[in-house]
Image (cartoon, rainbow, N blue to C red; front, top):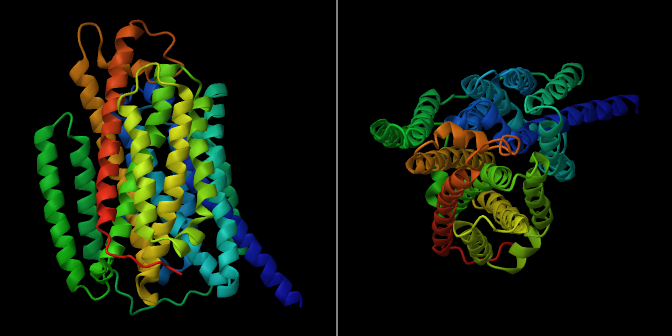
Length: 485
C-alpha cells in the first residue's frame, strides 16, 4: 500500500513538472505577441520584427523530430531536463537583450530547449499512465495550454504597461527552475536504449537546409530579391533531395507512406495553412490596435484572449460535430466564415471600430478550435496504429512550419509596403517609432504616418485572405465523404 502511494506521489510530481513546462513553453508565444510593438519600437527592430517569432518557430520545426528520436536512446528524463534548462537560459538571455539581433539569437536558444519540452510532455504522460488513465491526464495537461492562451496576453500587457517588455522573458526563468528541480527530484527512469534505432541524420540535414533556406529567402524578399530567389531555388532542391532520401531510408524522419491518403495530406495542409493564418492575427492585431488606435498593450492583448476563449470552447464540440456531419463540410463552412470576416480588414478605414477586431478574433477562435482539432483527430484516425505517433509529429511540424513561414512572409509584406510609401521627412525610423502605444503619442506627422501603416496592414491581411482561399479550395477537393464515429 505504501509503495503504491509512493508511486502515485511520484507520478503527480512529474505531472506537476509537465504541466508547468507545458504552460511555460506555450505562454511564450501569446505573451510575446502582446509585447511585440514595444520591443520593435525600443530596439528599432521594425525591419527584423518577423524574426522575433520566426527564430523561435523555426527551431521548433527543426528540433522536434530530432528530440523524438534522441529520447528513445538517451531516455525521456535526460532529454526533457536538457530542454528545460536550455529554454530557461534562452528566456534569461532574451530578457537581457540590448539589441534586436541579440534578441533573435536568444529566441533561437529558447526554442532549442522548447523543441525538446513540447513533444516529450505527451510521451512522458504515455510512459507513466495506463491507457485508461491517459485521456483524463492529457485533458488535464491541455488546460495548461488553455490557461496560457487566456492569461498570456494579459500578463504580457501588464508587464509592458507597468514594468518593461524585458519581463515577458524573465517571468519564465523561475518557472523553468521549478520544473528542472521537480524533474531532478521526482523523475527517475531506467533507460534501455534501442540499439537497433536508426537516426535519420541525412533526413535531418535536408529538412534543416529546406527550412532555413526557405525562411531566409522569405526574409530577403523585400530587400535582396536576387538572394531570395537563390535561396528559394535551394529550398526546392533540398525538398526534392529530402523526399528522395525519405523514400529510400529504412526508418525515415517523415514517412512518405502516410501521404498515400489524400485526406490525410489535406488534414496536414489545412493545419499548416491555418497556423499561418493564426500567426497573422496574433502578430498584427496588437500592432494595428496599438499603433493606430493608441490602446494599451493590455487592451490589445485581450483580442488574442477572446480568440483563445472561443478556441477552447469550440474544441469541446468537435467530437459531436464529426459524428453527425461530413468533416469536409464542417471545414469548408467554418473556413468560409473566417474568410468573410478577414475580408473586412482589407477595406477597413481608420474609423473601423475596435469591437470588430474582437468579433473577428472570436470567429477565428471558433473556426480554428474546430478545424485544427478535427485535423488532429482525422490525421491520427487515417493511419495505422503503429504510425499514429509519426502522424502527430508531422502535424506538429506542419503547424510550426506554417507559423514560421508566414511570420516571415507577413513581415516581408509589411516592410516592403512601408518602404514603397516613404517620402520626404517620413523615414522608416519614424514609422518604427509609431509601432507602439507608448511611442505613438510623441511622434509628429501622425496624419502622414498612420495611412502608411494602415496600407501596410491591409496588404498583410490580403495575404491572410489568400491563405484562407487556398485552404478553402483544398478542402473542397477532399475525397472523404464519410462520417467519423
